[in-house]
Length: 545
Ligand code: ARG
Image: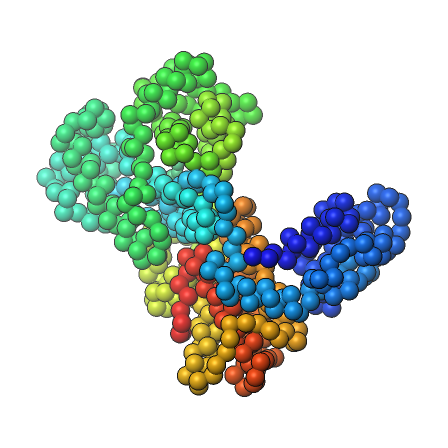
């Protein structure tokens, strides 16, 4: 597909010799794109900027794409795309099975580490954000033709399982018959028991050893607990409509056998050294060392992540690894990546990125808490949204609220605002899609014939809409590169707004002839981009609302 900004950029760069940094025009009277390249060149050359701009305008060869160029203000160059070029792009978009998204011929192998809830604990809002954001990346990067392998790094290992298994044996409970809620309640009883009963605490500690050394009965109960949690996680994934499946599960326990090998390797190569009994890796620029083996011989979260990186690169063949985990773990990942680089588990050509995100706040502006002060479960959060809207709309509201702010920001979980059908919300975009669908449906019911070609773009509202449509591919490419879903949200919101201006100003069904056909095609192209964009956000695009 023809990408207008990149075409323009290339042509202007030819004439100017430097990157023109094309920007969308700030006002319609400035055309469609703007560049300040002349101002920058003028500074370098010590010449009047308007003169440099005029020189450039005389040399830039874009007459096939643009109306005659204009020099504005102190020396900006304004570009207005010809209506027939915009029309052609909109028509191409309508015919393109990829909706203008560039599909790479050099696919990356991308591991996305997302969701990652902990076994026998309810999923919380942090898991919610990771699940929604990671799933969006999965969809975007897959649409670009990459090979994406999600890895759900669930917390299925650790000393807490000694306590849990011991409590099950103590109660004579049948782990296979539990629900996720049962196992959460069990966790609480086990914790209380552990604190109050020295004998039980001792037994729980021995149980950890039994679990680690593979004692069959212990392992069986542990496995049953994982199954219980998995069922609970899958219910939530289904409810949210995210793409994670059992195939993507690779919990912490996956790496158990690798941990001693990784540590031995780090020791052999002098990367890990003994410090106060523990095996540590000191990394320049970090205040604390990364502990790869505790003095009691145990391995922790960080060692598991090192083993996971090694596996992802050498066994899964990843050349890009994306971790979608809350911002408080930023330091952990920076340090793990640094150690993995030192050890060669993360070779130069492999990108590793931690995409952090902020917290979800209550309406009072504080961390979301239950009335009793406990952590809010994901289940109850989704329930509140489903109280005010049907599932597809409720999930759209929740997901869009999560994706539409820049990720590092905290945001307020405000169900009324999120589910509103006006303003920058998921339901508003769904509504825009339903509206475009309705027009096309009405045309069909009225027997109106039209060809899938945009041919007339005389009205400014039509041009604005077509121009936005032409930018879709570029926006998706940017999200795939920089991993900022709010850019896509902002774009779709602008598109929906431009569509509603178009409806106000340009009658569709009430016009006739070629204009009507062209406007129907423009509606169809808009519907197509909205559907594609919503799908990349993991949001259902309804035909009716
Ligand atoms: N289970 C962890 C938590 O709830 C998140 C795991 C993230 N992934 C990773 N590879 N460390 O905090």
